[in-house]
Image (cartoon, rainbow, N blue to C red; front, top):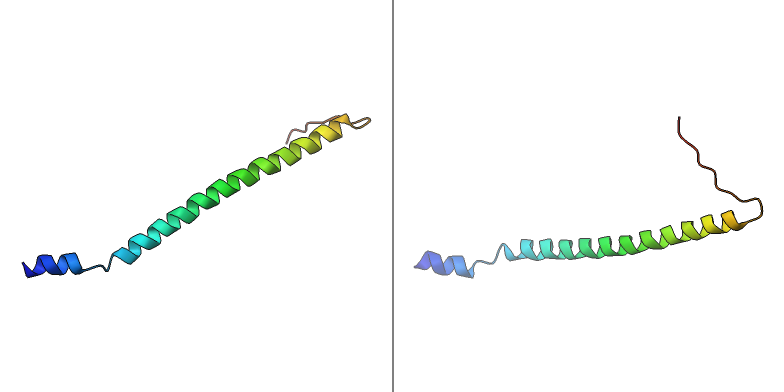
Amino acid sequence: MRSIVNFIADDSGADIIEYALLAGLISLAAVATLTDVGKSIQGIYTRIKTELEAAPGGKTTTTTGG
């Protein structure tokens, strides 16, 4: 009976779980933020491409590696 009481009173693993949950939450926030930043950057490059195509004499050229 004493070992069960000691087991219930032992909270040494709680810190590890808290740190793991905190790391997971930070990771999710980072992924969400970077996804939004990526979409914003893509929009900027699309707008630049559109402006360059609309400029006099502007046309896009595609190059192939090789």
